Length: 132
Figure 1: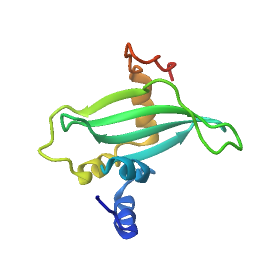
Figure 2 (figure 1 turned 180 degrees about the vertical axis):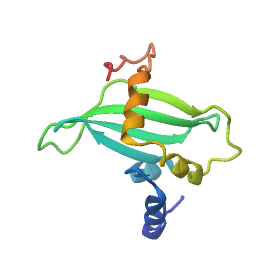
Figure 3 (figure 1 turned 120 degrees about the vertical axis):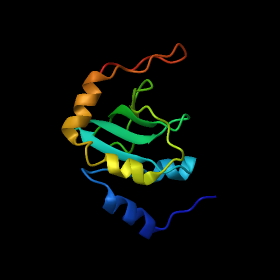
């Protein structure tokens, strides 16, 4: 089982820009290093952006909208969210340093622009998300 020390997590997070950081929960469940950023829309809604590699080793940005009712312990989302491939050319290996480099240009404004230009994922097995 893959492990990360607190020092390794802090090193990764210190290299990230614009509020990005290691998605520790995703690493625990999937043993893959991905980066995450949250942008609050209002007191009960936020967008979660996850930067990682897809099955073709392309860098992908996943976007999900969550509803977090005040004083609840958990947030909910519906549908599959949105997905945007940021780099079409497959990487030879999944490297967290390449994801970290991208955090410099993925500012809040750039992320909201990508969100507005990207359609929700449509799949016949799941109800599509509302547009967000």
